[in-house]
Image (cartoon, rainbow, N blue to C red):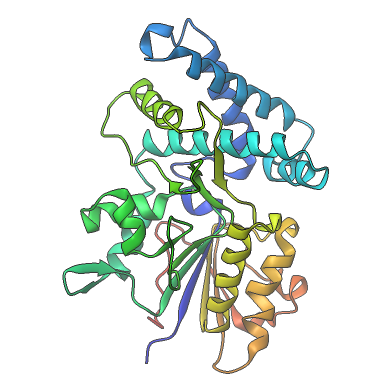
Length: 327
């Protein structure tokens, strides 16, 4: 019988296409400055420049607000702790739009293509992940789902269903892919989850127009929407369900592959559940952690989560995502 294998992804898993947490603040500020500089982006380039200008304001607001914080995640946590919920919602909506724009103006990281080519199987007329493979990701991006579209030859919404990604609208059953911090999309006034299908457009201006027009059509008006990014520590229904699903998956996991994730202290409570409480500490079959990172070897897990180093193997080569022999 094949082992139950779970991938745990961090920002490094998408680093060839999207900014890491260290560079995210500066890239948000850079895009905001471009959008506010009419010499670089004249209003005639856009169908509704007022929406573009507002996005520029929001990006620069977020960049400025993050200057005194280690990361945008820590800024979000401060807003949450201080009950600045309107500011937190503005942060999440702005971040969602930023990631949609960055994803749709770049092809997905090719390593996702290599991973899916190795893992996806035929199931009658459908293509899906094997039952013994799950993916947990701390990333807001849709790199996995965008890459899977090429294999399934379906719409983005249909791809979410067929590869069993959470969160999504009208979700039932048990997911194969879980976004622990939510995903870059939004919830309309009727509470239905909407994630924009990648536009088949060429220019960055056209793509940005499409994103903002999509949001503007919300029945609650321009920008008056609820972002689908849902930080794991928020304890709202989406984040609570994501953590519950992750715990169930980890309790059945034999092999954990950690890619591009530095296991920050910031996420320690949920990471303790993932690495120790629902994994190493459950006993049963022998456990294994493959830690794929060019700089960190994963031995810090021994002190952080009391994991014996015999369970950890370092994978330094990051040219492609690691496929364990246990599969």
